[in-house]
Image (tube, rainbow, N blue to C red; front, top):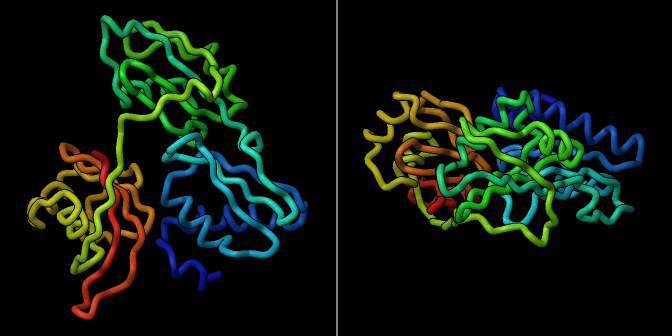
Length: 257
């Protein structure tokens, strides 16, 4: 077990244990196991642990071009179908002529209902249309109880996937070579700012890694990490392809915007 832990961060050990329990559950019951919505880093960990196992396989789905997805661990005999992921697409009707709604407003109102973030997938705010991907078992709860964003009254209905709208957010890939995997170095490289500026942002709690504030400039980034920098944007750490002859790290970053 310790040999597995050493490939990941200490704070990720709880999730690793959960993945191993899911895997054993599928192996013993020979039946699929569906997870809640996972962020990119969690999906990377899950894929790394399951790997190319002959007995247990993994698939992810969260809707078209989704960032957050549910994982399905399944025995090799099964061919997963979209219906196996139990996803529902909701649309929010709100007075768009009178208020402006952003992603953070929708998420904050959803959290106010006491629902765990893991039950909610992507939130799409595009051209005055708001759509939310949720776990299907909570679809009725949201249609009945999600009736307010800030001071504005809203209504929610479940719609077919044919009505799904693409997000305005577009990811661009950038190949970089960096001296280190330290957070300050990666942020500086991604946002085209000085390392000193990146350090100031990190120490001021303006940088989040996987949706949690990270104030350690020496924090080591890894594949799948989602990083947001207040005032600059977001990026995801993609494939890390080892080092160059000059001892620099080669990696792909996916930037939003």
